[in-house]
Image (cartoon, rainbow, N blue to C red; front, side):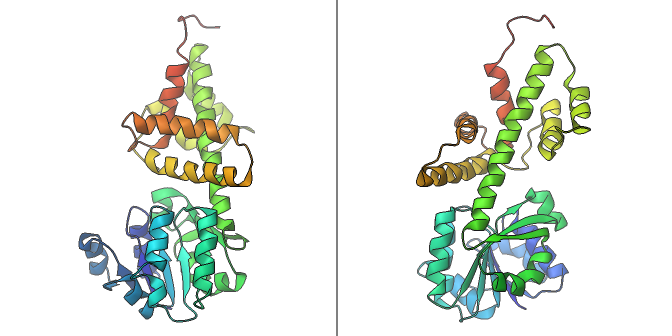
Length: 296
């Protein structure tokens, strides 16, 4: 099975390397030639347009920034749809709007092309180690055909439902992470304001019912005051925008998600969008400066 890949950023590069390691022939397209070079050295080949790439492969994966980028690459003037043969499966590992994913699936289906929305969780580390969690929306039959490809990049592959369902699951994931970060920041705030060392507080909570991956990873970030990005605030803000737009379209209120979206937006507005989004802890702490140094 020949694989095409578009989107060679922090997630795409290690995914391509893992596909090559698993023995898949991989062809690429990128706007910037520099992005191709290390992957060509590793054994991939290149095409001069998304349409040309689509004509060569059985599975075409996109991993791009936002909904308009995915639509342009798949459906635009030189897009995949103009070169694809019927039977091609497009797998989008970007985080985009569920509504946009459904629109793309409908447009591709008219050309005999299956579309799976397959957003991921696990960050750069998961991409490097091929341990990504992959949330799938689309036909079960299409998923089974591409499962060996996905297994070269991820550890947990779950079909959520029809087109757009994978993106809904990813939106839920981003709420959980964002609200979880705010929760951990408040844990740290309460401990420090009470004159208690947050380090053993975190250790104790990790051993009980309050344990979570967010408390583990981001709690340590907060203790170290080290916000080198695992997931940049600018990207988390984009994802939370998708969450809020989707909620608005459905006529529902998500007050905790709305609060976290505002905090991440403030962080970006302060010029700190390249930091990990867990840096919203600094904003929460600044909003809750203790009035004195007395402990409880």
